[in-house]
Image (cartoon, rainbow, N blue to C red; front, side, top):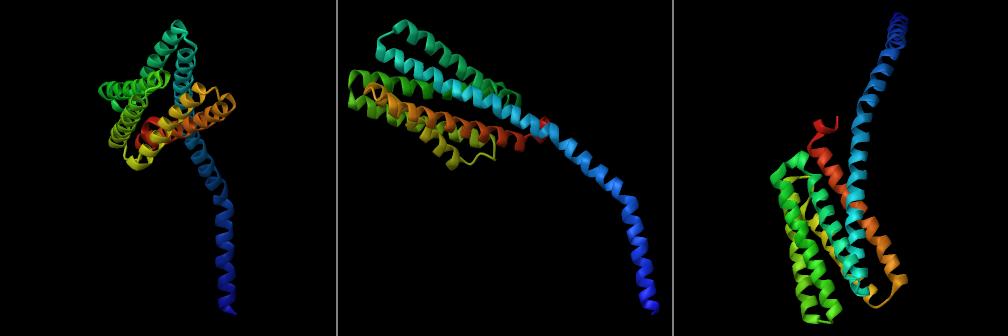
Length: 219
């Protein structure tokens, strides 16, 4: 009987403590959520910026392809300037985290990526299978270089995963060029949608990895 009374007393004390402490616990939980909100918002904002930049890349490259096949050299030249400006913007996006030297290195690698795509485009327009094959090799090698660079800078970007994403991206460029050359417009429209979604995957992966590596910059 005494044991039951003691248990009831302990239970009453514990219940009273929990009632008194509940507002404090709730307040702490609310503050934790509020503290995390800016970080989540900033990661989302960074991801949105990177998505816009990477979609800009495929948009302007596609313009170069279309204008090249149409024989509109003036329009193709304007589009190419935008490709270069976009590459500088993508490279510039990593400068706050990795510095100017890293930004310049990435721009050089992106220039190599576009160079291989453009050479493949010109080889396709000229009907040169041997040159097409050579540029596929260059595009593949460049993808590995970019993946090596980014994975070396950020341990949250595994080389194999990133390399696979970049190889698939290069494959999309090739498929798009072939479809536009063959005037397979319905098929190319599907390829464009796949390219756009793929750009989202790459952009989100980069944003997430950077946020994980530099949490203080996202607090």
